Image (cartoon, rainbow, N blue to C red; front, side, top):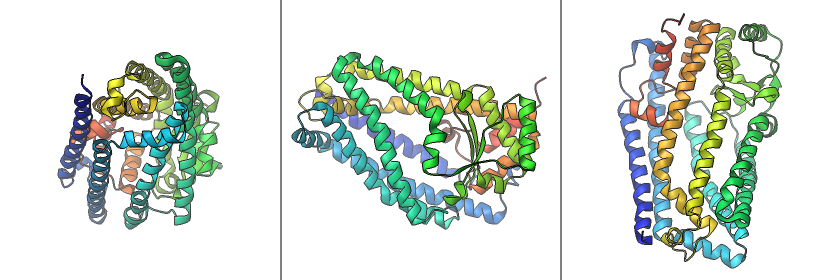
Length: 414
């Protein structure tokens, strides 16, 4: 295949992906004003529903602007041989392809962060502020950005460094070693994320003795779950939105509840939410997601190994011979439609797991508490109650509120 043909494949895939995404966004926006189903009639009052509609519309317009600018920037960089230009610059700095690759990706990453910073600032201090979500200060925002930049550079740099080194040592067989290292890295992060990363941004405190703790301990006994590590995170210092999540496994597993969750939901509703989170653990969803991530990454690394030495791929980006960083970019561009499909499949599996966790919660706690809790969480976050089914298929990791309520209201299996 000619380099020019591959170049047009790059651009074709990018354009196709952009317009598919914009079409899905448009379809979803067309459903913003659909009648609210009877099952959800009590989620919003008239004032909050108008606020929800306005919030959806503002975010839709903002997403169109940011994604379009990003799309145009990538196309300009592609058509004007931006990747080849950057490769020339880093090659002039050092003859080592190892350091060339690290510099290449490091510069791309830092530039992308700098470009996205004004949009992130606007999103936080204009959109989220206008709708009473933002609680972050400008000082905290800047500190968060610096910490995130450092952590992402450290982690991504570590992975890239090891991958590039393996490539230099083993050539196309690098993918085996990279896969093993990635698996160990992901397992480590899953086990220690809440202990090592979260405290850099938030304060975690054990749930204090209370009516809630007694209810949660009773639930743990019923579900035969060892509830010895449940924490409250100070999410309210950045946002009024609430959440809860599970992290780790084995002796390192933890349940984390946002302090906003404790403010917005009753003890019975929080207990129902925890029953849902325990359901994820009992149904081994955390383990399945971990294994799926490792398996899919292994397949992707193997496919990358097939083209990592391809001269024609490098030439399609304006570089005369194959280099790890150039061929990795070319592979990512060719992989664009596959990435979209993987996202669709991953979201389908995630929604399936959410149904299973809801079904588990239904077995061990009052269904009405979970439904009322879900309604409160959706009202608090001004969620879209009428998303387009295609948009849900492509982007939702959770079923819609209506889908979850209908599933929860089905008769229990005997």
